Image 1 (cartoon, rainbow, N blue to C red):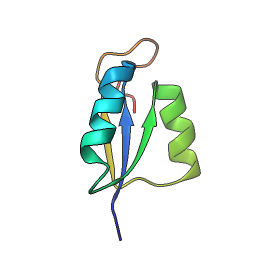
Image 2 (cartoon, rainbow, N blue to C red):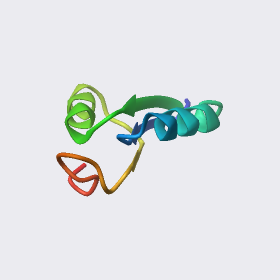
Image 3 (cartoon, helix red, strand yellow):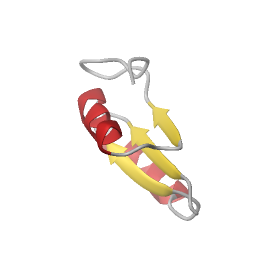
Image 4 (cartoon, rainbow, N blue to C red):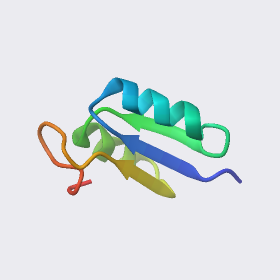
Length: 63
């Protein structure tokens, strides 16, 4: 089974770059902000969450 990974970052190029780099070994899902991440985490569990710490709205520490 492939581990699931959630990437949370407000910068699109960072999300896309990480997604491309990690997609071979992980089932990658991306979120553009903390609220989107919370909604995704309510819908399914993730094995790993990579998050930007400084984002508009809620910080990555809240995720």
